[in-house]
Length: 307
Image 1: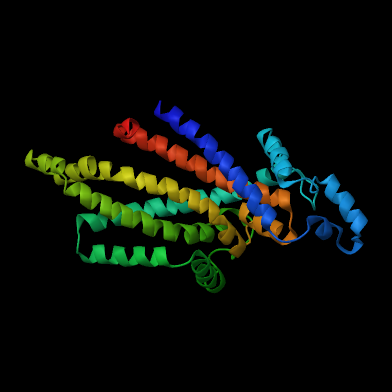
Image 2: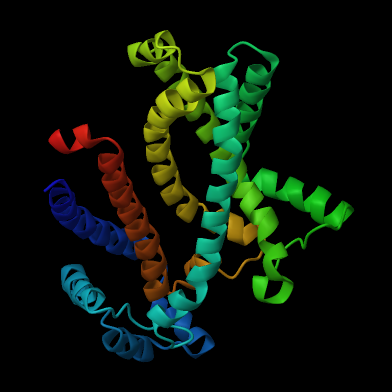
């Protein structure tokens, strides 16, 4: 029942997302017909093109037509390349997912151990170093860290390519983007893990386990960390949606042919169908990731289902 309730609650959220995406895109300045025609622009030709693209209809009619097409899997056709938007997105999305999952792995495998180490030894040098690293990771903008990585690891040391597609350079082209997006994520995960583990270590069930004579490592891993990972899992799910949105900056810096780079190009060209498809894909991905996170949270902590 919990999963069904959460699934039904997604319907108004997704409808709101489509309205917001459609409205924001159409508030952007510029006439697509004029941009497409370029030097061949004439008022009569532009008017005919607007009728052909359904741009002469009222906004609510355009929205309902677009929404009906979206529900059937038709996101329209690019105003410039005349390719179906779905085909373009399918070609670009693997790069974005690879960067997002790579950043997720960097954040989890770096942030969780740092947070646990800092919580086990509060006030120690390890705790202070972890807190400083976390603060720097959270505070440093992705674009600035990306430029630093390019300067030192790509230009000076020539360890990785400064940019380009994985099709050209292989998996090495994804290392720097994943590090750039994963560093901030690692800082958030480390801080959340530290707070959660410290809270669990102060709970009565941990004191009971110690009083029973259980080994310290068993108390830490079975009773403390296991329960502390529940809020950490929520943060991971929420931040993965943020990683998808952060692809716009990351892919632009590293010249990756993903959804983010496609979105920037479509904005400069006023290619409305591409813009709508990119923003809708990122927004729906964020909503669905949150839904999966809620479901996993309810599995890990059954009390959530009763709320």
